[in-house]
Image 1 (cartoon, helix red, strand yellow):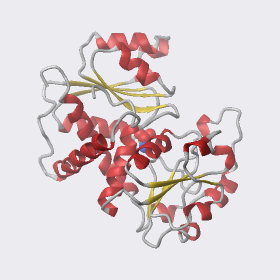
Image 2 (cartoon, helix red, strand yellow):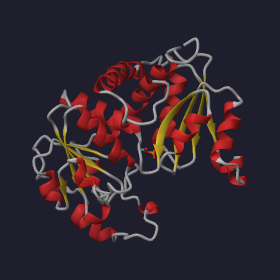
Image 3 (cartoon, helix red, strand yellow):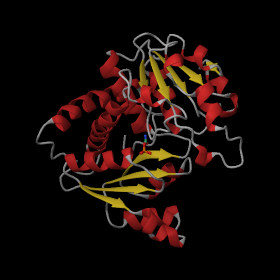
Length: 305
Ligand code: CP
């Protein structure tokens, strides 16, 4: 593949190969000397039109650990603020001959559009409510390292599914690798027609996470709820926030995940986020490894790569 625009379009074999490579990158990242030279001489631009802590930092570290020259475009102080369009911004950056552009954008499909306008490899770091493929890959890596497999596990994805690119990419990836995915959300935060995709849907959280091996919580994305129903925080936490009592309905050895950033006391209780069943910090570590694996895979398709 020349780009990584989504999990959609990857085969189970593609996904497993990336997870195997990421497992090796974990070892590199844990060494005192963390550098490999696979991307030496290559230029990587991180172009983030939306805020990010984890994704941008880990793509920067991943590129640097592979020896690339990494440039973070400060969109807030760029000519985007003077009205330059996405297509013109892409053409401008393309003229500087980057090898890889990592893009986050608030509109679904914007990253695909940009990929058609540039000559280099493009990685989707999150586009609207569409896809966040490296998040799904790092979640899968975290699950595989802790449970030894993905096939046959019951994974409950809980919360604001309507606005979540993380949920979408995870649904596609986990189903492709044979997990049993359930969706758990208030009916106002389930996309219309989602039942047609074949995933069991629950509005009652205790029933939805009953016996689950993995409870994956999502952030309540209030910034995307323009004019639509915005639940009260107190009510949301009571019915859809993960606390010890609700988690007791999952499998006894269930593990808890959250892509971050977390709203403590909204979708997840602090003691659960920091508790012994939480994989949240490990997800962050796996983020660097997965992004190294993705950048290396794309580099092998670059000219003279
Ligand atoms: N999980 C995730 O994408 O986090 P950031 O928005 O901080 O990158």
